[in-house]
Length: 402
Image (cartoon, rainbow, N blue to C red; front, side):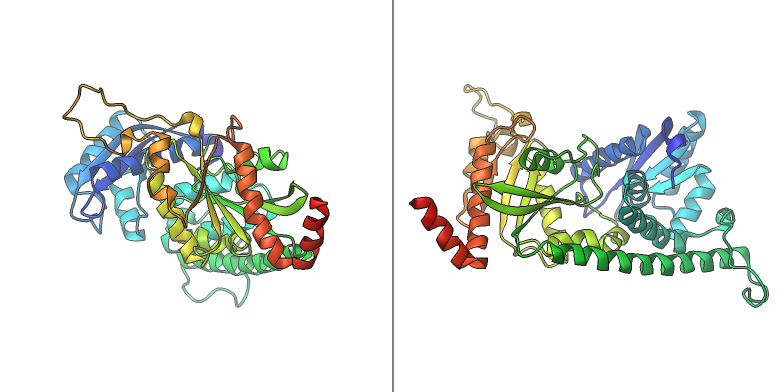
């Protein structure tokens, strides 16, 4: 993983491909996100290399000629790191390292590194460490002989066991230990959830860096860490919120991202359990992002994976203060109106206005339309609350009317 101190001034080149499944526009968008990830990790992206291929080369990801171009640029500009936009196989990683002779990272490794930097609590650190070790195991080379916590001693090492085999055993033992530790943490978190009683649970979900933590701070009047970087929040935060005398629990969860490493989905099971056990989801979307519809699809894919896509959901379109649209001159009869020209009012008239889509447009930062957001949330929570406590609510609302 990247050393945080080294990464402060670490220059990197970004590498992606254009394929049948990923056109030029999509490739450019993914590399934009990869650059943001690199910046979040503490690196500086200085150049991009993109090659058009039917599919990535199974041996070296890029073609031989393109990889030589990358090597020449790296050597002449003293670049220390090459970052690939897709997960590299162990064979690809070994082959590329031989050719480029520099540090090689892929998207998964980069995300894991950011998670390692961001983890604060014992739970988050354990989850990240498990994901890192599961990623590392099939990619072990002799470079990893610095692992000094070897289970040596009589009867513990097989005849002729190599250093790489010893390292593999150390990693496997560590994975087993971390999984046991996580089981204990999961049980503790399950008890905590049980102790919260039958209060309605609301979970903030969404793509990374859409403003969930900022919204959490505004609504719950708490101080959850919020920053304009990817994965600013890793640790699940739960706060009690009261709107019009109805109390409920609001949870801020880790942000999702496209191509989210499978190791993270598995290791962050206890975090995702907060989403699974929620009664209502507030799906927060950064409407100022040009590809917010893709972000919605990515989040829905992960929600589907954890069987939460059918939960009651309110679509919260955040950052309306930063939303900009292209304009068409009244005299321009040739330019066709596309999504880039949509105003917020235009968007409200699209799929967002269907009967089965609960949507609200806000700015958590500038507190625009927050009262409407609270009212919408209150109405949805009240529906669940009345079902759960019908007698109490009957008395409560009858008393209110008097």
